[in-house]
Image 1: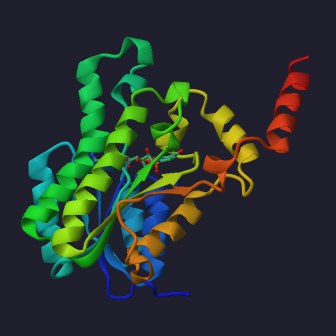
Image 2 (image 1 turned 135 degrees about the vertical axis):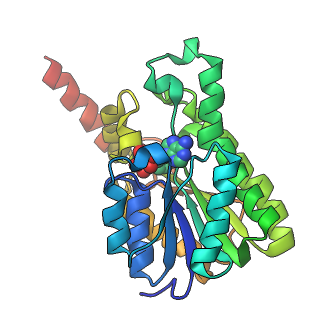
Image 3 (image 1 turned 30 degrees about the vertical axis):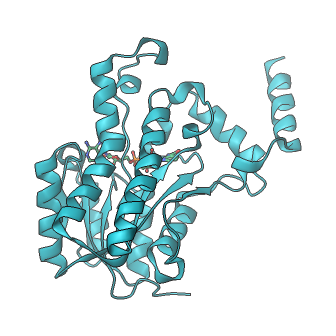
Length: 276
Ligand SMILES: NC(=O)c1ccc[n+]([C@@H]2O[C@H](COP(=O)([O-])OP(=O)(O)OC[C@H]3O[C@@H](n4cnc5c(N)ncnc54)[C@H](O)[C@@H]3O)[C@@H](O)[C@H]2O)c1
């Protein structure tokens, strides 16, 4: 099973460092024969780590884009088509940021200006991306677009704060735009709901360690890693999944459908004993 993406052209958002899910997706897409453009917010590129990834991936071109700016998005799509020599086959949206969380504001005390910024970066940016591509006719027929999401869109994780609403909007955009893009161009749009993963964004959530352990203990297969998520993205980008669209796909080792596990019970017992 290799070269599933041979000849395919893509855009990958959100590779910050080698912990990033997008970083692993880029490595896998390269391994499977794709060529792609890498992008991230200009401020995130200061560290320069993305250059190492680009080098590893056949000197992929890097184009800065703040996803909350329409002009950046338009320029990214235009330049990507020029660099890749035509329309695009796949896109990964792997972007998320909560301003209130970053500034330590609790969910019951949100600053709404920051909440708007959070929604704009983490959710509306997905619509902005799709709308820009739609208007520029930038995606090939049967192309595939994936955004990463989290189960806090369906269930309450108290410390996930305003990101829960962001993910609900994101998933809804995948369904709504998926209809229109499917009808007009057969383009597929899905979200992948990933297990907690030790990345910069993930570990920024208060209590991350606790719900990482809890999710791992509840899921019959354990937590899905970033590498496994990358495999799933490759499957969603390739032609084998061509009839899948408008879905929220759980990639979580079975977490979403498990009510109880003995491992969770053991974890709680061990914690109690540690406290004594
Ligand atoms: N880590 C987890 O536990 C987990 C679980 C489920 C879903 N996700 C989702 O996966 C995606 C990727 O996150 P990650 O965990 O790999 O963390 P990460 O921190 O490596 O990636 C988040 C990316 O968003 C980018 N970003 C932030 N603001 C931006 C802006 N204005 N313009 C462009 N890019 C911007 C950052 O630069 C960074 O590269 C996010 O949507 C996240 O919510 C993460």
